[in-house]
Image (cartoon, rainbow, N blue to C red):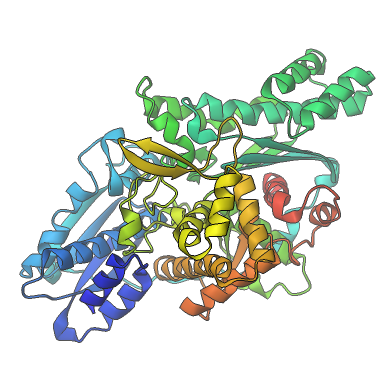
Length: 602
């Protein structure tokens, strides 16, 4: 069995962690050894027990040991990326020297004794845990591993889910908007979408394209978000006080997607000379693609902040505080007793789905909680309890390692389109390169050259794929300057799925469904949500054809999971119905901005 996994990996095929888990755990008892992990969660006196089996080998080869190590490290990494925690104690039979050798090295593998930017690979998730501890648990020691013999394993009670469903909570969320001014913002990897709601009606939309990975300072992330808020505030003012046509026209031009930062800034400056205290925004809701706890952005290991992390001229931890305190910066633009509320974009997706479901004819889904993913630049994940509570955990599922194989694609550098290595950590097989636009791009380069050379030629002719040499090695990439072609490339791939009735294009989207199903099995194993439904948001599911292919692929892995695409029957609240009728913008595009309005009103 182990040799089969390794041969499959060498052949360039994925080896799903869910399949390895299943087969290792089904080995005869005398042929396997159990690893027990007790995780101390952030909430004191709250802990979880995890266990998984690995094969017992009398004289394993280096190749076999490397595979088993990658499996053990991935299991632990996925748990920590999802739940965070204060410390993890590993219990094993210390007499089994091969197993003891793997786990006794965990503090080194996860860079526990290193600081910040010195941490690489698995250690990057420890940075997030330490930032969470610093924010939520002042004076707490940093995360660590402890290794104990199996004889010391304590009894751990199974986690009980005593949460009572409360549909009424979600039904109350939109109430009172007819008396308020609220801004909702959805921050993504390629764009920002914002919406202004005035007295219960959508007053305007704003789209803003950006490429934050190239930024060198946190200020470059903060300033555009604040500028958009200022612009919407200026829009309120000119509409309310009927200022002259030139000022109004400038604001309308600034709201256009193509408006430059300088034009927006100049238009807003003219209005801000007059605003003073005449315009009062009640609240701002914002979805941000990083770990967020209690309105504070505390992750700092996402792709969006890579350029800032790599800036040797700054102290990253100090500079990142500007982004952590984005809520304080936004408070400057609301009234004195107003509120700013920030959560992770995946959580916002789950929250948005819950509110819309609560207003549907059938709202049984809420009784088991809401689980959602955003599929775009990366994979976002959100989980909302049935009573509306948001767990204070990282839930960085895009960092989950789901593939222990694909050795051929593992050889490429992370920035190469063919690579399965994570942009941030360098670790292979993470969902970032599977359930995202990067996953679609990667599969196109995997299959088109041999199976559809005509389409591969088109990708090059259209400029979606360029080549460059890095240390004498050829690298494929999507240009982002002078024009960012990631969106057009993705749109082209979506169109191909809809128009080219061939197995190659179908295969790409079905495989994405397989990846998403493995993610579903991993989140089920670690988080144990009651629901098997996954609400999907984002550009990758806006096409019915692509969504159906994703569902077909997912069924190959699990028949218990059910996917529902946002924009297909979830527009039930007044604002979402208003968005659904809009001629220029869709629910798939702006659903989370609407959700952010409701979240801010909560």
